[in-house]
Length: 114
Length: 115
Image (cartoon, rainbow over all chains, first blue to last red; front, side, top):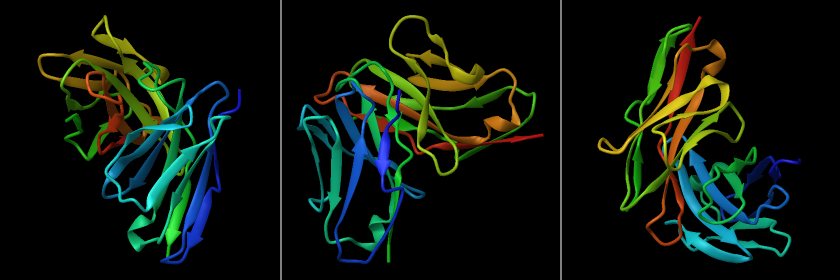
């Protein structure tokens, strides 16, 4: 069974640009959650999608957005990049929202903003 | 609001000794509790979970965790540590009583196991 696939693995962008990250969940998993991981803040919840609808949202500015497609693949977008957006962005899939199963995480996309 | 605290940034233990990584949580209702491990340049891997029932849950790689409702704790334990257990460990809670059921993670505890 293929795992959670995140692309790209590494990304370098300039301040002010925008970026799109992609996540393909495990086959059959319909819920996709996104987290930002930084050394100082740990894992911060961004949002969760299920059946193409955002079900939960964390406390991030509107520059951070996402969507989910009918095949459960998800993308997140960050516009007007700031230096502080440099982080490891992790995608996690699960069967459904509120599932008693744990997440399966991708290896992450490491974004560096210069 | 739900929250998770991992009071130790780092835990050091000698190989062969027992290890404990602490976690306390705060939720408005009944929680799902999880432990994950992260190795360098990788995503998190699921170790174990508490949903209901027996307070001692067993997971991957010989790890176990004890749920204590009165102390709102969910400490991770292993009877005999291995050097290969050295990694970053995260406790997480999913509050079933708040809309959305989002999962919140602790700040992480770095475990060093010395040979």
